[in-house]
Image (cartoon, rainbow over all chains, first blue to last red; front, side, top):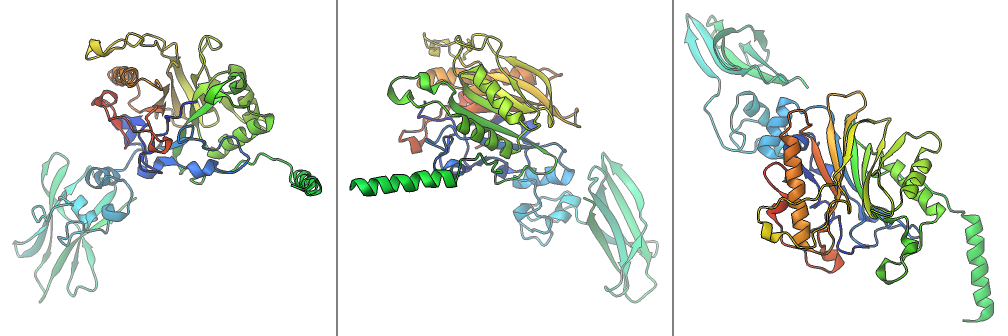
Length: 193
Length: 254
């Protein structure tokens, strides 16, 4: 019996010092809660496999079989977890710049620092009101759609055109004729999965 | 205590035993394995199963009873695990006995143990896996003497070879996902000498790095087991953290 144990819990449940993983394997770990120590689970009286000491306890790791989506990878890179919750949630605005994470992700903005570079830009071209934006085709888990409205209440999708390409990033532009008192354009990002 | 009262209490106790016979319950682990995940567990079974052969000191404890072994099997079933990295396996017969209990009623558990298992190598590492959940690709025991060290002067004269607690390693793929291999390495570090322990760690880290350098090897590696880090709950001071266990190739979870 070794009283200096295997399951090293420096700060109680969940702080683990005895599982080492490669970066590739780490990417397959669903989230930090996959590492679980449950000493009390073995504390039932009359059972021999209770935790007599801090060691000799089982430790659990859950490996994800499916690869992370591009958005999950982005969350892990920027917020440390792949899950859609907390600071990494699609609707969270960690840097307070008015752009939720889903937009920061779609437009390749920094989610932890306020930023405007890379936002869609409005313009005029040949009598049309235009919206130019950058679409990253590698982000297969979202869709980009420019929509138009006269009143901000009803929105209609617009087709857009490819202006230029830089790697996986396309610069695209959509436009509508300026034939009404007011015209509004917006870029809508929708998670696909 | 009054004799009559004592007898009465004994009678109540016996009546209680008869009224609530022991049963091993497959208590499910509180956290269910998420969908599309495989669960890997590390567990030091603590002198499994020859503790009765220890005759003195803190090592002396009675052997597990048949009922306790049933309970252990029930617990493992409740884990819903695919692979279990085991430490302190003293008897191959005990491990096979456990597998028989796991498979009673239709299980698919397999064991990976060292071929020279026995009196030559007590406290061995081993692997249990559920072949209905994962497919074994390859397995090995590291039996070479781990001599590499960045500072050879740090290698203790009494450095053990891996024939003592040889790391057990195997590559598995989840059933239905043959393109998702992962390697599990079950280890048990030296319990008393930090210098030896760190040298073992350094060797293991480089072992992992050498695996990762091979293009055909899976990059998903879990090094799990009994690292013999001291714990405050044991009333001992944790050792200083060392980089010996953490080269760039791998990273610690904490």
